[in-house]
Length: 303
Image (cartoon, rainbow, N blue to C red):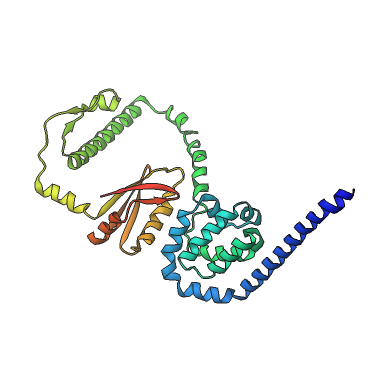
């Protein structure tokens, strides 16, 4: 009992006193920060245009855990990821985000969980510059349920048709397939410079491979038109489409390049995309400043 009172109890007292002093100092720092909120709001409005691309670029470069805390800061998450939060605040200090210096100093000194209120206020201001991208994944989840609904009552109706009507439908479908095949062949001839002919009957059955024939001579005028048409276009591909969000990428990259009004992006499907530029100088500048990453994964971008 004497050892407990002389050795253990004093250590507990020192620990509690230290934590109490730390909490009191953190509370005083939070109070001081609250008094400067109006000034921070004014600075954010004044620097809004200059901060937009910098905030987006800084946010995209941070970890997934910090991204989640920026959009939904919680005290438990701030405590668990305190070091990562302080590192992100240091990046905000580098781009001179209003109020970031005071919050970073307080977080480094007392811990992010003790100054959760100033961090939450600062993250709310950061979210103003970020694109909306919360509901995009929910839409993707609903798609598989819709694919199962077709083909409920259509097949029984077709069983009542006469054999003559069935033959007409089959002939019409074959004609549609033939016209679609011709369109595909013509487009491939223009783009690739190689002419090939398909044995259409075998092609429709899905048995025979493509058969190469003579080489096509494409006129210089047609070739020049195609080159001119895509001379100001960049084609890109996501390296991890399951994590990288296409809609967010198409809206964010022009802001990072500072070419919002000079670039038009489009989703080409299967993780590919394109950007059409208004001027050759802007296109070359984007290529020279590469490579680029998005959502912590690289993207490929070529002309």
